[in-house]
Length: 356
Image (cartoon, rainbow, N blue to C red; front, side):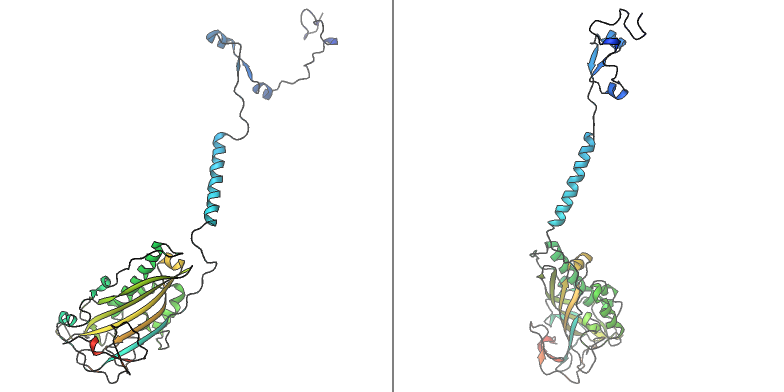
């Protein structure tokens, strides 16, 4: 009688001797069964659908899914793009930022040849002066048409010009600054490397070409004069140029005319005009452009009518209507002209005064 594992009829002929099954050593574990390409339908499935006894099973997916592969590919592309943009940056960036140079300043007082002309009619005074066609306030400091340079974009050039204009407006047109008030708005526009020099100029004014407040801004002695008209007349130019691949320079050349009267004299007092010719040189690196700041490296100022005997380091002490200077400079200087004075004190040309 056969064993429990043998067929009823016994071992078929040709089978290996001793009833040994040649596949008995093969182990059909769960992973082998799941990996099979052919799957047998259940009895219920065969009855209901008249399907064949077996069906093809979809192959098991091995490794990463399609979504994972796409994600990996996107990350690789983004990383490669970032590296490419870093290598191919359109603008050159200096390896190390250079320290801003200190401001060099010159303030030249211009003494009148005779009495300072004046009248109670401010409008009439302007009409009879070379400033008759000047514009008022910030309108007199228009931005020029600008173009990109070899290493700076249009927006960067405009940014440099705008910062220079803002400095002129805050330092020479703001009534509070003009009358010796708060200077923080001017300070905020300067490169951080120049702040110590700026602060020292106001804490300890010195006529050394480095630390005169009147080299940084225009301000009058409030005990001597006050503004008769807050609308300062201005005319001049702004020009931008590239110094090197990391530096822009802006040159500002403006003539400013102020209507002044004696401090506390009232509206009926005679008014006189005070003229300031101011040439400023600004420099901007990329950090300055980003922060809306600039380096003021040269300030050249001619101002009058002033007395050469007066100290113009801390405040401008103007000569007002009817006053005369005790002493003057060696030659007449016209602040409306394009040339630059060479004397440390000059004479205010008659042509620069209103005809009243």
